[in-house]
Image (cartoon, rainbow, N blue to C red; front, top):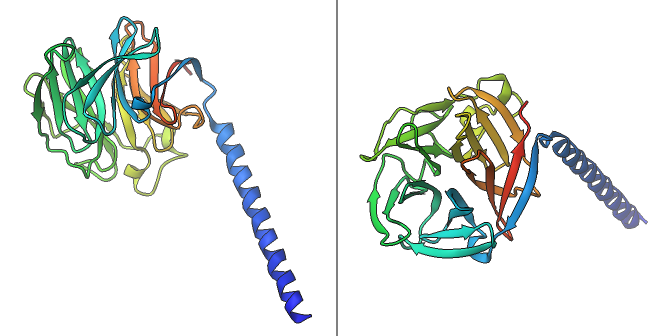
Length: 285
């Protein structure tokens, strides 16, 4: 009888714990769903082929074509939005950890997580490759790359550990054609603004982990994407945070690519099974 009572008590306790866990989980899901931005609408989606399941960076080429890189393979993939197919694959390196791509005219730039930058001249034809080391390391875990046409420079986003401070995340610039990287960031996220109140960690640098950066061609606003907890941060042209959007993880399971076309339409790519590219509209606040 004593044994049966013990079993009953243990079973009851486990059931109560399970019920409490389920209740807590459901409450967290409800809160998450309630906080998903209602200002972002997906207008069109492209399911990418298996080669781009781990798409990690995109750049718009014009003619409805997008240059893509993926995490592990040293290739540029030219993806045609009109027929939803890879048109061309251009190898520039062996396997690595490639996190971003930017295009300046006929030259492609690819960022590796350790901070190395690959310059691929005439990438659609002869694909002549040069590499440039920077002061960044694997510890910084570099993920964002964008060509800033107005300043003729590449913008680079630190994902994990900023080289200047554990309490901030910087956007750095590599000036072209020298590829010299200034050790001072051109934009700095300090996470002190009210917009970060709900996500600010004790170590402020752990509040946000940028996966991509891009500048809106019409407004000059700076868009910064996060993949770890899918979010989109928008800064005004001077670098002041103005909007913060929680993305729906079902649609954006691991968003790592941002690109604008010449009209200002925004494309967000996400790793997944399959990888995806979404064209989205943002209703400004």
